[in-house]
Image 1 (cartoon, rainbow, N blue to C red):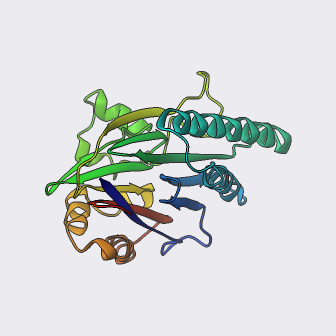
Image 2: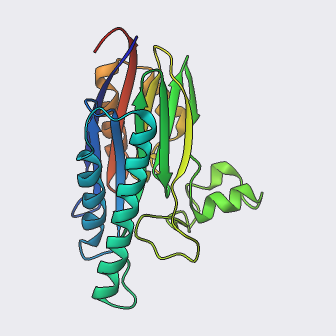
Length: 243
């Protein structure tokens, strides 16, 4: 039997005056999430706050399929509510948030996301990115127009192509990846405030450290840099044995 233990932290960073990130750390529900709000005039806090509030209120004990359906339904409702609120505030107003959510049932996990907040799996000393950014620079990388290592410093690195609350021509959807878990796995959810300051090699090195300190060390490493954005991390450890 596998058990999970987790820790989540968020920080305003070194340049911002307020924090528009938010997170869910609910091992009792088997649900974790990171949301990175955008929109200005505190609207980003509204968007990310609505997401973590609704995900944190998911009923306990749902089966895997029901849990995934519940997450999609709740996020879709927030998406529509944000569109309506933005329309009331004015024609050029956007109130949106990225989202990366993780759910675990038994020896399996599923990750759902929209935007450029990421999920990683650290296993056997190797770090693998689970999510695929919905961003302009990721599209440029996919098309072979820029190298992956140039993406984080690209002048348009902050342009996302999908978010909860963003008005797009296509119907809103969450992408999903699912896979099995093994004892010793470590999963990381993070906002782009982490990945725009710290390389994946550095993230892997921190995740190889003592379990209880990984979240704190990731935040500390970010704050030792310019930390131009809010930064949020949630680390989920998978171990052998009952909770």
